[in-house]
Image 1 (cartoon, each protein chain N blue to C red):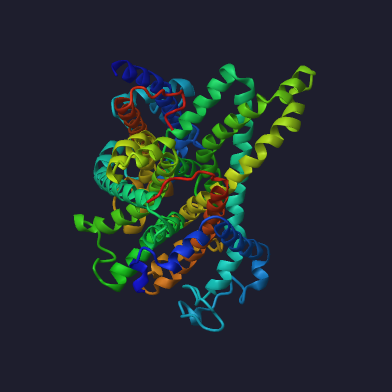
Image 2 (image 1 turned 120 degrees about the horizontal axis):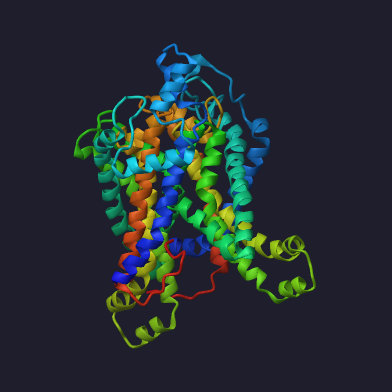
Length: 314
Length: 289
């Protein structure tokens, strides 16, 4: 186990390094001179010498490679720079906006995990009954529905129609109900299709047939054989779903007007506030990286005999 | 509807066998052909000019002149949806083409050069895959500035690594066939071998996969347009129409929901076609109870 953790960490370092490089380039290669752009934006008149002096002050006169390493050092010290638009440290803004996104994605993740297991198992295992068919059609429909439409539909029904929620006021914990439901439904549908696919694959194996002829109970077959063998690929997939939840929360935060990281990022795109955008990309990348890492470790812990290939992370 | 709860209800279980396999495929293809016809001749079928503003009839209910009602500027929603087909599907198609244009050379190079070229290219793919897809697309769009072009580029850059890996796997398999080895030993030039022997093997499965990805591409691109990061108003793109109508959601929800239903139908038709193909290829007989 220790050896595996060490090996997996080591192989992750180049990826993390590459991620910082991409993150840096998004600022480093920004079209136009950032100093001039900022001065123009502030409406200050300036001379070429003043711009040059500011460039030296911000270290922009140095070659790109050198700037990258200076920036990387700052990153290790959690110095994420300052937001141009608001003039506040990016880290501070992140601390403010993180809780919403974290709550939203974790809640949606846990509930879609549970829902997808139920949906996937029922649609895979049961004979072609009306219940399993309806559920199957429902998942088919849900994977085709854009999350923003689902959110607006739920708002139309529950906020405008039934008046259970206030359309404009979102602030306390109760207001996370609709956002979490929206994220959950779409995500669970996607995840349940893999659960279904995997269960069907296992149920076609000869040893399941043997277990059935042996007279093993359904519960024993599902628990002892099916779930045990479908777990590793599912865990890998859960990490990926978590990544898509992190991305998907942008849309949900935008519709429900929740002040999360996604809203911060969208605002940054509108204001061309690259420091925030860069931090957003790197932070989400890091969380996603750690999710994949955790999935690999769990899989190894559950089944040490599983061989991981170089690209087995996904 | 009492029979819905009965496990042996005839109507729905017949629907089951209909729903899987050929019917799924046919239904999806039928929808898809409608969309293709609309994409080609949408403007000709539209009852009204898509950008004709009629401020006297803004946000009006469905009527004979305006079958789906009008939006906040009094434009005919149905006409806009019909003419928007070309732009919405065309954008997804362009993105798919761009993804293929990146993934195909990368995958081929990786599989055929092997060694360090393979290692470096797959490492780069890993790094791109290390970000959540939508987050990465957002960062690229932020860098380029919000427009339809940057949305296409952003999505393509976030999407290519998965497909490049598929190309690599398919190519490795194709290149190990004996007749490919034979033609190499006969002194054929590498580019000739790729064009004559490898591409014909890998393109059919690749195009099938790519057409299945169209559903996902449509979803992402319409989401970006909805966020105001893709197609910009007054373009009659489905996602952008939703975005434009958002402020009037409380006043008339149907203005916002109608374009969404068209998106759902389009995505669903791609998914149905994909499900049908998968069902036809699936020869397994799982035990069910």
